[in-house]
Image (cartoon, rainbow, N blue to C red):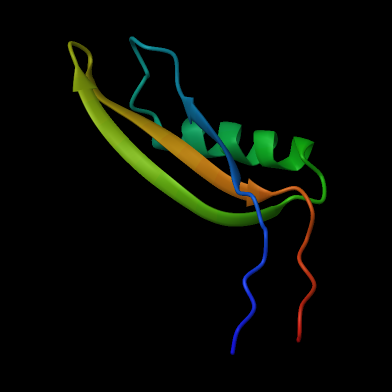
Length: 75
């Protein structure tokens, strides 16, 4: 039988500023990578890319799900 752990997932979302250049996915990914590096030892669980549309066109955002404390590996 598996034991449940009490992990809590944290997350943050980023998007480029609204307007000209808002759809620049490589820039958005660089910004996400910079933010992830600021957490140091955080364990990244998932990255989700979303796209909304506004008067300037596609407006992607990314949500990063992570743990600050790394869980023990191997049971």
